[in-house]
Image (cartoon, rainbow, N blue to C red):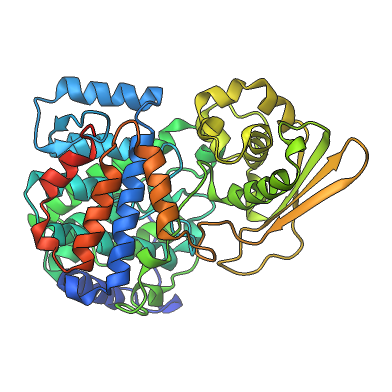
Length: 471
């Protein structure tokens, strides 16, 4: 007979269950008026950024093939598939199609205090369910903020799931369930039932899959959306997990060694996770961004080095955590995105903002392949705490024996150096030009209605339809 582990030892940590109940009570009773205006405006920008990240992947072969399959099998519905023309699908098919694309190009927003992407793991379902059931935009924004908060607080409570379990798996169903539970206006007990069910359905996806480029990693957000929806359906029928389910899953099964229960409720209503998120400028793992920025600063001063001319060796010093992103010969676009070696080689070859640096074609780019062989990684001896925990120093050794160096303590777009509104809008415009030309106007319109307290005058259905409409 197989051994069944004992329940979590309550004497080893602060009781978790009262904190979870308090979080669910707060989440279910929150009103739009309780959220500071700057937080709502940031949430609108995060929503737009993630839609832009979604449409940026619409031409990737696997995403396009999956979208075509969904369109062919679906009789049609009220929800928008985020690609050119905006095909209308059933709620779950739209959520799955958009969820498959949202993290594909690594351009979605994120939360670096602990590695999790609450927006990508919840917003495709929130938007699809909002369209399908005619929810007010106020409900959509509430769900957006709540899902981000709950997801970030779960990840902060169990940071020990890293580095073995990828956050797209560890927290996917939880983020999705939190967003849908708030959208459906669950009371506190039903909200808690949805989370206790969702936590038993999370995907134990290995973090190594991202480093190795296993593309199934890009499907974990979509899987979580389906599971989060199912957990909410079950909660409404009285089918849920136990009160201790989260501790049993994260501690006993996934092996997160320490429970930090206070993270679930500390600063509720005063600290807002969505306001502490970051926006990505480059389509790579965030740990590569400081190295890319440092290298780009050298190239701007020394443009004759662009393309690797006269560069004998490229040395990159990064945090100990970033040292594992050292894949020298990536075989998939995902592996390239999680390789600092590839990221700096592509930056040296074509520039940090070249969008094709992390597409499939970059894998066979002869210049990038040649430059990857000149890159070495080494750990930085001293790294500050968050939000300065992802620095990089880049050194170029030139053919004449001289060296050029640059240091980036925190990448632009990170919580330490947040992007301003025009910079994020510029990114949104660039990413959405082909498939969603109406997105920049839609984001501006949403923010204007929030600023003027006129959100009830904005209808989600036409707003979504206008995103993919030709201009």
